[in-house]
Image (cartoon, rainbow, N blue to C red; front, side, top):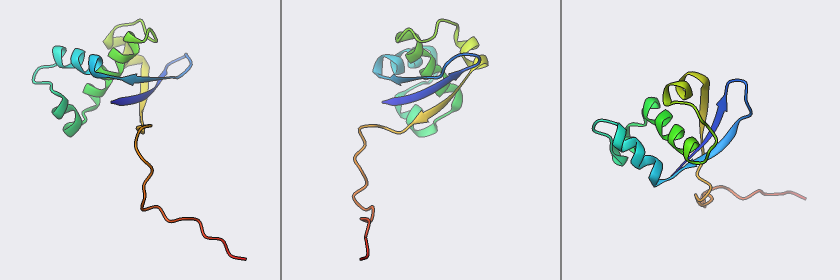
Length: 95
């Protein structure tokens, strides 16, 4: 669903994939939270929570959500399952 590269202060970065269980935890703790809202609005606050729940579920982070927000940065990584763009031009060589 979402892949994150999490960069905690003073610790090694790690990658984590958020799945439906993590989205569900976010929905349970967020007023008016829903997957469509998450996809359409992409608020950083919400993405922090999803990355946090995924990191906790994978035992990659042990602190609180507030600590995660204060001590971690993250990047959203591209979907590995996305197909290659068929419209990309092929490399052409000249002799």
